[in-house]
Length: 356
Image (cartoon, rainbow, N blue to C red):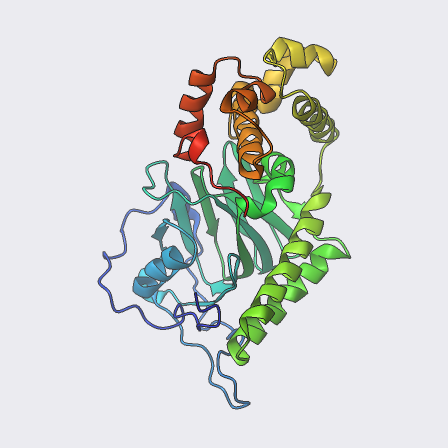
């Protein structure tokens, strides 16, 4: 893989795409009809000091560019013939960084999306106000805030006026230790405080400049990605929800307590709602209420944690038999464990690749 290859997202797309759909989301009726006559050019992609401004994309090109850069999305416009957008994208090894600038547009990731992309988008508005809806959560994010988008759940994303954003696409495999935070804080407006959050925004700008202005060696690309990942981890380590209510703060504390208890007791086959609720001093009804706004039920979540822990054990080769692994994550029936493990990961336990 040539990590230094310049992205082609700024060039016009020559492949045929379907005409822009005339069906707009009901929210589109409230879209601003006054489209800005021009958009601010973003960072240049040319290395010389007299570099030209980036090429603007029309609605026809924008749909494919967005789908190529992020993942499968339905894109609709209030006035397709007046749409203009710029997108600068840099792909490191596994992480992608983008600077996005566009006028009014609406995105919809439907449940029927054919592709499965096990990643998240972290979006930082630079100008404008963007709206996001996912799993019965809705938010409005402004400059100084950011939010997390899950790729495996339907969502809506739109802005009624011109907006500029930084966007990071990160595989969830790189954020295993932050999975609990991601599951609790997705689709919430989070604050960029002084420190890691502000440095992360600065680092994104520097990466885009370096990738497009300099020829970097593979080692330099690797170092840049590790630095970026470190800042992402620090930013997600203790995110502050914008205007977090007293109730949501309490719920977050309870969820963290449940997460800690379950992770320490995965070998216990009786991690039922009743058992966990009693251990965490809450009612079963309240436990289910806590999970109502998450991407899965309590039982699905426990099953996922068990299987991910089993996968970690199998990859590290720190076991003797598959039956032993099954017992270590709370399954007494090896056949059942092997069946659900294959359903989740796509391969049986014995074929799990090692970490080497």
